[in-house]
Length: 184
Image 1 (cartoon, rainbow, N blue to C red):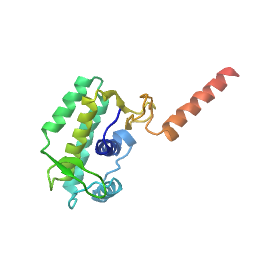
Image 2: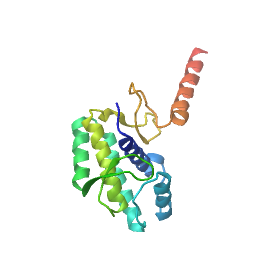
Image 3: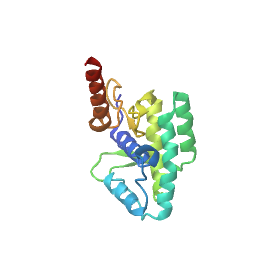
Image 4: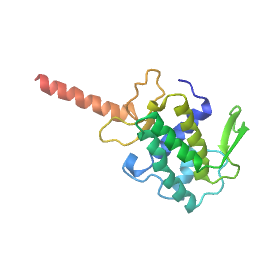
């Protein structure tokens, strides 16, 4: 599976955005405009105007819609969800080569609000995943106490945990201890 740099970049933003919601992380990670500004800066999201409380509210409202795509059991369900997302978007595809990146496509209209920007670029990235027949790479972490989402970019589709150092390691250690306890 090979996706272009801009699709992978947008998918990373979608994952991180969804994972800021309380149902993913256990707490609200975008409670105010300052945290939204930090998210934009950390993710190097381009063409963002001045952010307001309305932007924060609209971005938080977008997260559950994006999360639904990761929860879809069938490709047809994921396709319908992506279509619903994109139906609400004002698409304006254009080529750009900003900030040292080679030519790539932005799908949001110039001057779009942040939520619309994230909806269009993220929605199109999710659409590329579905069109490539790779919808099963969109998952929720397999750790029973974790609600974070992930995109499995591994060759053999084996990524199960949002972070192998935390969720994966914790479950592997617990399984090891259980085997040791059963053996003694």
